[in-house]
Image 1 (cartoon, each protein chain N blue to C red):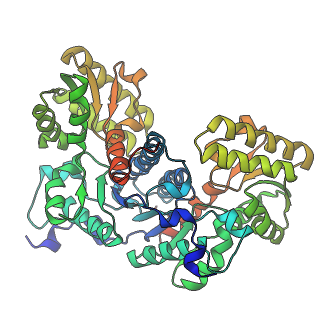
Image 2: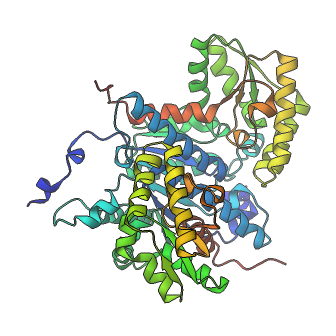
Image 3: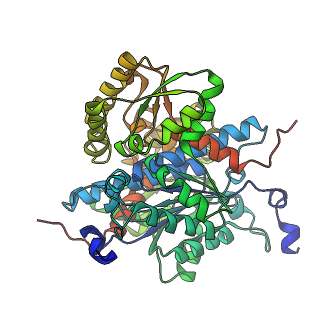
Length: 260
Length: 260
């Protein structure tokens, strides 16, 4: 029997595209993003009428690197300082060398460097989380979206711009609310104090719902869903990481059509 | 200001060692292994008296590849057939090229190829899940361990051997129990039917506890903890993947000593 003859039938068929995930921002959020992506692939296979088995998932690689803090870098872009963009370029280069065709960043604030990555790696599709969120919300008729995010994401205007272009108002917390979110992200999730994180996120979500009359609250930081649910928020929540994971699964199965 | 002068202090210190995870067997178990590893790193940092922050985690890469079914391959090792060892060697080679120094396989049955990987990559530490489990249980004085695993893992004798060498009896389910476990793993977890998986795993765990008088039940398949808890098992459980994740975190921080 020749090696080729012994290949199982599945190995001769088209494979889903290989994709990569840039993580480490923080590592728990990166791990959770892989979980969301695996679930999104399963849902995609079911929607395509494919049999779900381990070998039908796309090959995917997760890079969890120590990336300098994104919000701090946006506040202090000293020339010569070690910047998040350096670490993100290095990791994307290695993902490209492995052969991935599309990349998702499991960090909202890191999208401030999206343009840099997409420009330097034109052969890759670098997904854009805020644009994916806007593309999902627009046909749902949402008009006022509350945003929970880091100071860096607010200052960069990543969501404001993407949502405005979709005709959606982006409502943001006041200065005290933003500080409270940073406390929940850094002293809460990143330091392992989930109870503190839940209190911080819940308070700000409720204030956004009441004061800003938001239709839905977007969790625009991958650390936030690790400690916030609709019970604590008192409002409908949308996890931007979930939206991005769905988009990455669509990229992986882009060549597939539903089976009869 | 020169680039070097602008480097933050942390960048000049020792870094934890870079490690890799072989996943995809199945992908949900691989994602869950990263979660366990990130938690194990946090616990390790706390035990070492280090401040926990994103940048203090070891760089780690997860490879989720379509690996041929391990149990099926152990039943049918036709020469020339595409074997799990091929996919595992290819992924390990790419992890080695990325620069990892230690590798963990997020699949028990795949350890049938552990010797091959360790022999071909002598520069890497390839961790061995059953030996890590035996090394943990021995000083606890456990003498009768019930094993939940795939047919491939039972037939390979991976746990029996590792536990025997530690002076521990390995108690296994009867033929019907093993079939029931395979149903829970393949028709349950891998196909997305978690309720079925929980029933299958719970029944076999209870039978092992009652018939085999096991002190503790080892979940020796990374799919099993995704659907089994102590309430359903009715017995103390040990997750072999958790033990392996702890071992990988120890490898990553091997050069570190507790800080005063």
